[in-house]
Amino acid sequence: MLTITPSASKQLQRLLAKEPGKALRVFVSPGGCSGMQYGMTLDDQEQDGDQYVEADGGVRVVVDEMSAGYLEGCEIDFADALMGGGFQIQNPNAVKSCACGHSFDTGKDATSARACHA
Image (cartoon, rainbow, N blue to C red; front, side, top):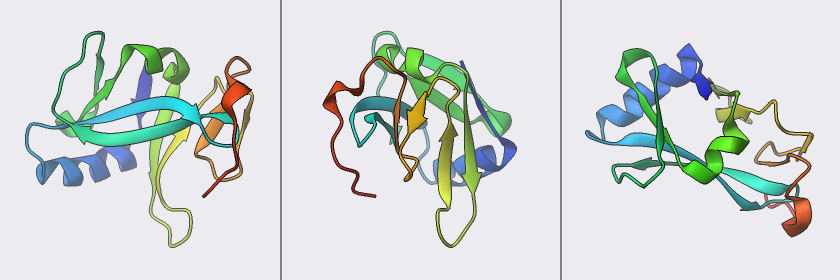
């Protein structure tokens, strides 16, 4: 479904060590200037239809059923930079994305686009 780079996996290991029993939940929701936006949270609640990916170091990533189609083939990376650092999603399904990198359009769901606040 999706892959996690070694640098993202290391950062997730650090975060999850402080939150035992949780996993990284990655999701998409309507919004942003391109129509859909990414979201991430640490979560310990299972939902019907969840899909799991396990990365290096036992890091667990959870994706809900609706988001899975948008995230198919994506790569989660982590950049350690003063400006623009943090987790980043490279999405091969996106036909366009916002300059901020937090919203995207797959060509299907851009009807709810609104101004970018990055």
